[in-house]
Image 1: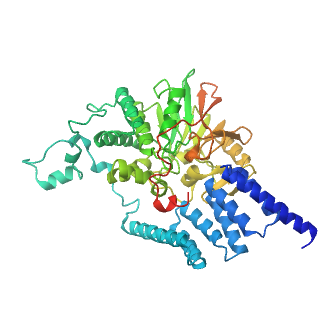
Image 2 (image 1 turned 120 degrees about the vertical axis):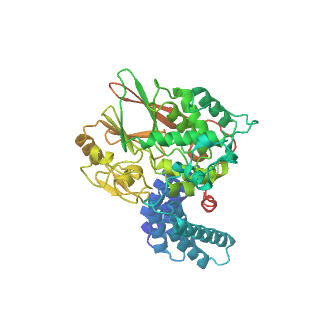
Image 3 (image 1 turned 180 degrees about the vertical axis):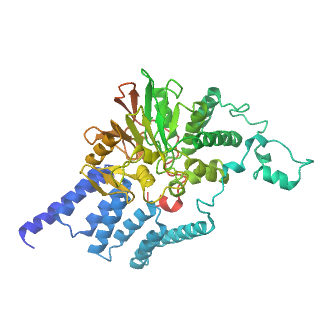
Length: 508
């Protein structure tokens, strides 16, 4: 090895050590930059590629993680950590079968490693469960409405000694709620009749702060009324803010209930004079997702024209199964609510336009030019997110610094440049795009020549990222963004991902 090559190897190792320190400090973007510099100096070191893959995983850039881990394997086919990192990334993407193949390879390379054996067994169980669920599940076209089988009005009605025959009773309602009658000793907040009041909602917020839950009857009432409201809304919702009025847009909350309360402390509770749009990813990761979703839904019921909700990529069965919401709902409310929330999420609108100026969407733009607002309005959204097409891209796409379009670092949808943003805005006579979907150190980032803003409202994401949260206030008629940042607040000692897939937690 000549002196120059030897020097490059030494410098590469120095960058790797600095990257390791940045990784330990949860500075994952910085770690990626440093690992990249090490790779530029010595691209034949499999460790650098595997380490960068791990950093990408921490930033939920699973597509990039798969690419880097694959490169590590190409360099050294016996490098078990390359298969391990790729398997973990596949797992996070919900690609259990691909993950299983990689963990089988880890076990083959390290037959006496008890950790590899344990994780392989867990992965095998997960794949078996997925295959079983796929075998018994109905497709979107065949799926029956869970909500239509529920009527909370009959709670407490006894059918004993009734003149109705059993078939009539069954046809009236698949689910009988004798077990959900509100017990006399129930001390939590109550809904009297049909109306959800601000007094009930405030009492519910306090109950949640004490780590208590409301009675299932009232949870059903909130969720079913929200469903009725969402069913009547288009896939693209137009929002009108009167002159002198203001409107607040929040990004991902991800089950961080106490940070949600802090937003309300800083900016006021939702009301007809203080409207909000929450731009998707209400649930998963954070372990107070049930509290978050019931809070947002309750305000939607209370103020239908002052609480707007958009679908994010985590309002889906596949994400909820992996990242905690399904397990949390099952633990706090029961199995039937798992199915009910999945149905409600399918009715969430996909995008909003505020005062014909600001386009708000969870993810981003499209793989083709020429998409008009009318195309978004016409999307049949009642389904699980597809793997391609307009709906997928609305939920999953990310901006990129380069012009044009590129592959997604997530492995789903695409990345798009400032020229794509400019053209979409011009063709639809809009001024600005607001989107969420990505952690930002300051809770927000302005990109694409000021025409695109990312807003993220979950500070210190997953209790480890150290980021701030943010929300955006617009005042009509100017509709200029006023960005407010905030820090995380304390919460009870319940770890993120507490209800997540057991197998996934082993890799966190």
